[in-house]
Length: 153
Image (cartoon, rainbow, N blue to C red; front, side):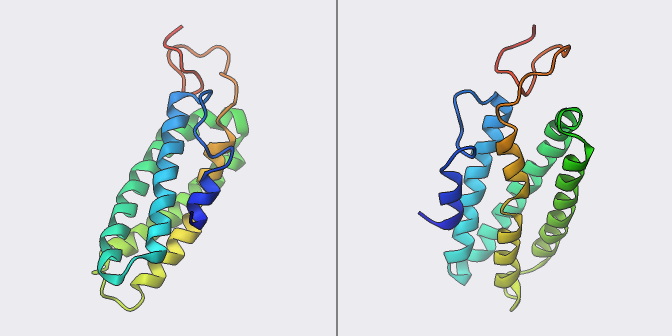
């Protein structure tokens, strides 16, 4: 078991039966991303470019879900400061994704950029999602919540 995957195999990073569906999906995504981060550290140069591209696409989608769905729901519960830290981390990651996507994979710095980016990304926001997985449902909300596996009330 490699470094990133090993970290994902202990609570609170494991998907738990008590996790609301949205949190479970984000945690599953974290598991896939961690495995890909490990892969970036070990693959040969001929495979690195497509793996890095896959990570870029997955992270872009993942961050969009967090920013547009998870963070607004968490802001009143955990506060603006914590959410702002996640947004700043996403901004840095988006710049790195942009840099990697503009490369051909043949640049001398490509491996260093890809592996340092994987280490850096590894894992501020993933820690946040894991730590919020068992927060109570907010009172007064209508409809299905990321906090609840039940349907509309």
